[in-house]
Length: 412
Ligand SMILES: *Cc1c(COP(=O)(O)O)cnc(C)c1O
Image 1 (cartoon, helix red, strand yellow):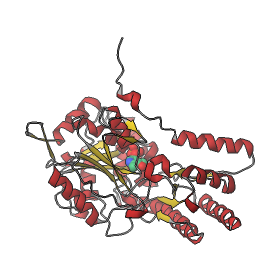
Image 2: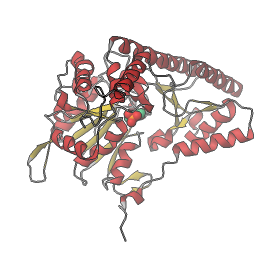
Image 3: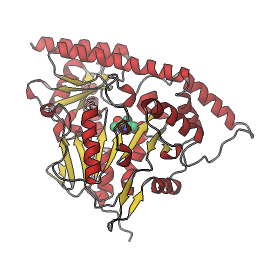
Image 4: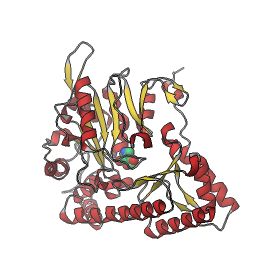
């Protein structure tokens, strides 16, 4: 009999969004007339911008002619998209990348989940807590995370981010090989100032570690002093791989396109000290396991970099950030402690009077008919918080704030 990869048996069932759906359904059954507003799931709601739609129509027409039909494309992505990325996302920040350091993908989840294949299975890893679950679960699958005891994986270093450290992860007091960072952060919506990010780059240089930097929410940064890319830090190209996604930037959650940066300077070692660049090995990996992102999706992504595309994408982001501002202002006025929402589409809200995350979730559902995400679902340090997203419709967002206001005022 074939034997299963037993690491898969260790995976903790991720009940978070299923549990939320179950509780919301139970509420709807007992309150059939209630109009429930969801500020829970991190998916966008606004349609693709006109420049993207136009480019996609044109790409479809290309596929209808012999002359412009596209079959398999380069596994690394079309050169016109990789060059547009280098020119628009990096050059204006003083970062000089080669198109061969960019790998176009079908979204950041695939690459953040697969990148661990490049590193020996027994290397150590560190993550922030709370965290985007992909970073841990993908390492459980390849056996790197160890065993699950008391809510934590034995081989994972957790860096709690909470009020006590203003949501800035502390550098571990021991060396780790791999570090996952996501800024602006999902779920907390908090950012890392340049001097904090520099500490991580210096730590990685000193310890020969690799940083996996998830910049999926980079486009939401409003404060000009906050870095958009880890390569804004000197030396980072020796130690960091960076993941980008058009999902949140331009509403591509249903289109599927993003990219990963693996600088040629980045090297890791064999156990006997031979150095190897990771760039050619990721290229080899992609050519073996991935056949490229669709031509239509890549044309859609390219359109984001046109002057109209840039302007339109900016407008949608401003729409979401205005939601975030309204939410922040209302909740703060109501006496809640609110983090995030200034440089990210997420608000991380402290529950009242130390109520636990799930209880507060239920109170909000039953008293205001608003769905949030319990913070503890993202890790132990998320207990006592809930996450709200700014990805909703403006009217829903305002109505949700009005109801939360009513609920909390009555309670006083
Ligand atoms: C949404 C999100 C992504 C992007 O995922 P895609 O696969 O590109 O849709 C990556 N990282 C984080 C933390 C996210 O929240």
